[in-house]
Image 1 (cartoon, rainbow, N blue to C red):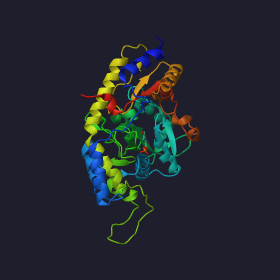
Image 2: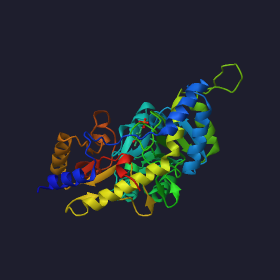
Image 3: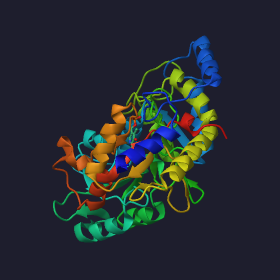
Image 4: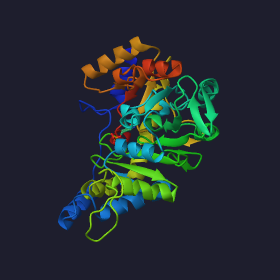
Length: 386
Ligand SMILES: *Cc1c(COP(=O)(O)O)cnc(C)c1O
């Protein structure tokens, strides 16, 4: 049997017979219907309502991060984080090239420039040792501001991404940020329910963003949130994302150019119901990851990505690393031909047209992960019964 055939055979054994099988599909139950119906009956379907308040409180409870502010999607949450971090036009923001385009776009929306850094295989996140060496080479502090020596631009922030739900090495990355006076932002869009050493992802950054898009571990249709331990940041985030309106029973007065990034109550109702099922989803996804790990263990030259040491990952998407791009492409084509929708990593951002000229460090590990990575069907329902 060829390499591709043995992987496909394993997938056929492990997956249900239904075709096509998508990469990640949402699961809904009766709670969703009950809360959505209640929301409709109340008439409060739009941008304020008690489900928004409840969702924010529930998120803070689930993540153990004191403040959560719901937003219309994860990209708008990241945009708000960057504004509150003080990112200005002409600044640079360090972030990995191996991420979804939604991590970099809000940097560009602000007139700032993404500066791409390399990722590591162990966590799929930013490699702290390589970043340390790189910054020693290209960055220096001038008046307590980190500056890119090559072009004189301020490097304002470091955005870390918890890729496919695996926690990055936050202690090391937080100390780099502190050393260079970079505001630490976490893109935790994929990592709700992922913990490192007893801390939820998103709790190291000054600010962090979550997403509840349709393909994430739980979904509100579309939605996102900003989480932070800093009460002042939380207050400013709420204000800025709700049109910067001053509280008043009838007057509409706004103290700055705000954003309408509010999550509708209807979506928040769905989100509340989904969040109730998070523990069950996490258990299902762990079972699925375990089944994949066991099933693929017997195939030589194939690596199944396990959670990093000292971490509990949500296993949002399960990942295989193949020997090379040729094997990857053969598998992708063969699986798609029979309705199993595997997916490569996102094409790294430095290879996307709009970011081709962005500054970057050498990205060998990013290239290697992209060349070898294939994401497996990861819907919670595939985990089966306990
Ligand atoms: C999904 C995602 C986003 C964007 O979230 P949206 O809700 O789709 O706007 C940002 N970054 C990462 C890493 C994501 O996976």
